[in-house]
Length: 257
Image 1 (cartoon, one colour):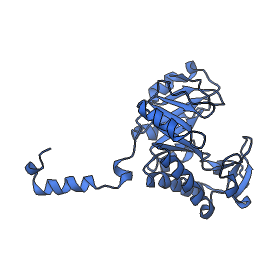
Image 2: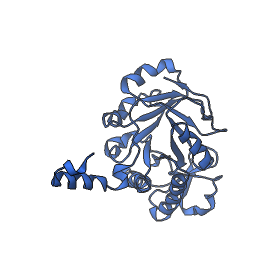
Image 3: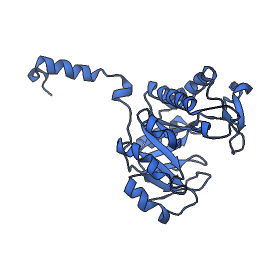
Image 4: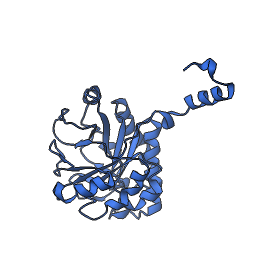
């Protein structure tokens, strides 16, 4: 562009646009229908023909993220933000006072998300790890504790406050962030998150609840475990979801719509 040909007011506006904060200007925004791979167990197969990979933030290295970037992939960092996992390297940093009931998975317990004084620095450190490994985005898991038996008296306001905190922590580090499940709060949170990640909306007849993300031109990464693709792909295409059939262990195997 020849800046000498731009009128002064237009030039000032242009320069103002160039100085926007990183969370407005440089953040990756996946669009509806983009292809993806979700692999949380086993050695990551970097040869899958998908534009986006969602992999474990602790288990995978900066080198793996770099390899995927070299292949033109975007990479999402999976971390649990609403539940404690007893095998993680930072597990001893979680005081017993914030640990609730088990969430149905071995070694995992719900967190008291009201205790942001304790949890914010822990989650900030996890997101620093994701950023430092080069991830483009974060998938924060267990984001709907208030709808479960956690052992704590959580309500919808607690969940909204915590989920928005998680979104801010990701954005402050220049990363995109996805809303995991938490369907009932999508209308309030779609503006805070850059995409959605959903499990089994077809099985439970809930996929229409994800429309606000697609309407906002934001991707919905969706998986089914117990339904074959013949049972949900037609609806997924109509709704513009990025849908996969996966096994519960979330290994390499996938069947895309």
